[in-house]
Image (tube, one colour):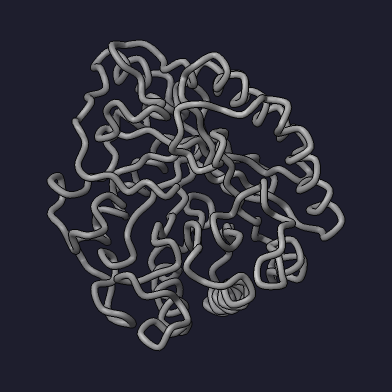
Length: 343
C-alpha cells in the first residue's frame, strides 16, 4: 500500500466488542505452519509517519491494542500482519536492534500468541532505508540481510511468527530484488530459523501485472526460479480494486475483472511449484466495491496454491480511511461482513 498517512483521527474500539471478543478468543497455541491457511488483517500504525524518524510512539506512530486482536480473532482471523519501519527497529544500518522497538514487537507477538494467532512481521519500507534503495551504495544488500538475520535470532518461534521480508519493494529493479530476496532467505535458513517466510514480488507486487514485462523481465519470469531450502516460503502478492489498482480510489473496477487476473497467477504458481499469499487487498464500502471484494476472495479457494490473505487494513488511527475495516459503534464494517464468509 503506497499510503503512509500522517497521524489520523483516532477511533476507539468499543468496550463491548472487547468483552465479547475476549470470551471468544481461541485458547489453543498459534500454528503458522504450512498446513494452516492464514487469513486475517493488516493492523496499521507502527509504520506511520516514515518522514518522522524515529518518531514518538503514540504521537507519530502506534502499535495495535489487545482489543483489536480480540475483535478480529472473534470474527475468525488467525493471523495479523504488522507493518513497521526498518529505521525504527534498526536505527543504524548493520547496527544493534533498538531495545524499545524490540519490546513493542515482542509485546505484539505475545498478544497474538495468547490469542492463538500468528503474527507477520512486515518490514514496510518499499525497498528502501531512509529513502535510499536496497542495493544502492548507501544501502548494500548485505545490510538488509543483516536486519533479517538479527530479527530471525530474536523471533525464531515458527509457531507464532511469520517473516514478511519487505513490503512492495518498488524502488528496486525486479531482478535485483529477486536476487536480494533469495540471498536473504538463504541467510535466514543458515541461522537455523524455520519460520514461514513471505517473499514479496517486486514493484507493487500486483496480481494484475505479474506477467507484465518491465525492463525486459517480469515478476512471473524472475520468481519462477525462487526456492527456499526448507520449502517454507510463499510468494506475497497484493491487489486493489480501484481503476489504478493502487488502493487509493473511491470507485472499483467490475468484479468480473478479477476472474482472469487471479486465474493467470494461480496457473503460474502451479506451473512453477510456488504458493501464494495475498498480503494486501481491500475496497471502500460501496456496493460495487463490496462485489469486487467478494470476487477477489472467491478466487482464493484453491488452498494448494493460495495459502491465505490479510485485508488492508484496520487500526485505531485510520479514522475515515475508506478501506478501514475496524468496527464502529459496536458494528462490523460492511467489508468485515464479507470477510466473515471466508475466514
